[in-house]
Length: 154
Image 1 (cartoon, rainbow, N blue to C red):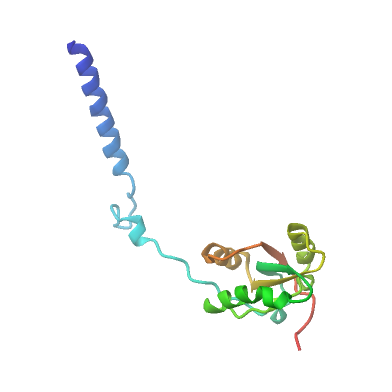
Image 2: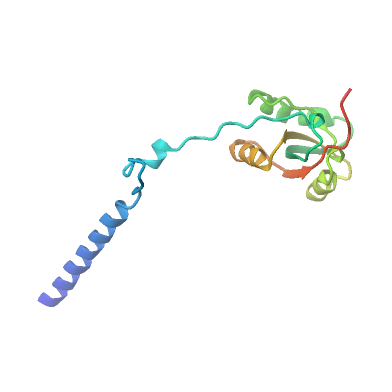
């Protein structure tokens, strides 16, 4: 009977040693914060700045947050999304995805709408669009890269 107790004690001792080693391996850099709590030191990224698609000839990245079929009442259907984005500081209006290369086809394929109209937030980089998509609690239909093709708004 003595032998099984020793193996149980040995197993418990080994488990405790492994747990204490695992608990101590979180830090270890030269930054002086070896035991810092990552939840305390982590920061939330800042909301990225949207751009006006007419202000650049470079590729743009659009995070489409709502899409409807163009037709009667489409703007009213998009208004809750426009309002939600407005509370975050993003001033958006419905726009035709045909104004960005490849966006209309992609959104039509995703939604089944033959003539989509959407609310999109435009960014100068894929990183900014990805940061927005990560931070935004609302709906996201797709992120599309491409150039703006409709010219300046009047």
